[in-house]
Length: 221
Image (tube, rainbow, N blue to C red; front, side):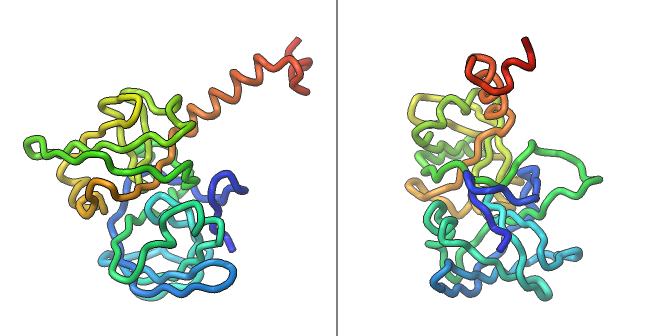
């Protein structure tokens, strides 16, 4: 099956973190290899096809079967164990984004759908017409979360507005609140967190320069 979860081998889809809309889980079925779920949407999926990459709450999965405004997905055992998708049931809403086409516009930032960790909502506050949401920073990810930097929460491309050692805050405009599952979240709820992949590549490159044992180091001498 095509669904993958970081740090497993990545699937081919690339996303922008601009959620198309929400869907609802209408059926789930567990088996010895994982779980299958059916998602129903309230918007048209005009170019949906079998084998297509699709992000559900920020997790890159693969469409198995589909019909008019519904599609089936398979969650591997690893995905069930490492995300909270396996805990969702009938009636639960989910964010949906299809993979970015080659000619598509990159309105958000580069999102792989390879969730790094499950975080937690630590605060929600109405600020005028907007909202401020705060999310915990899981162990080992603090160095990738910086003020004004990009981060993906449940598949939504967001900008870090404030930062502490324990959590970070983002400003949510009415449009984002209305078209994503954030409007259904409460303090203590889980969210999928994917940090900016560019930051991870930069860290890897800097570590490579410092590692004199790297098999590639002699090429640059």
